Length: 147
Image 1 (tube, rainbow, N blue to C red):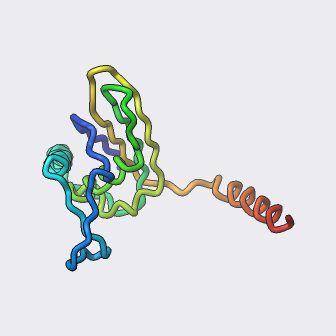
Image 2: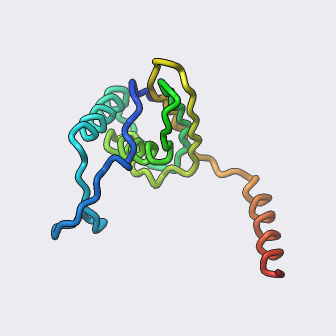
């Protein structure tokens, strides 16, 4: 199964949430205030994704390739934007949980005056190259232990 989704804008970064200390805590023990404009953008992203979704949810490990089309060269932290985007994919019912993302490729391009996101999701396949990679890691660890 392979699917492609689009967003008409760049979702807000998770860094846009303001941490507060109150006596009431969320499940994670943290409490946040999400500014109204940020909340509206997150809801818009979920709405756009839901409108493109056919109802079949990814419930096994997935790979995501995401292309961010940015309107200018303003600094943006793709990792934090991806955190918000992962949450939106879950709330839209596209993936069951964002911990099912086993591989992600984030890329950005700047196209003056244009903005949006292209998201490609497919099932994650275990690769036979893992054995080779693990061998390299094992050799490295042995060399470090020998120091």
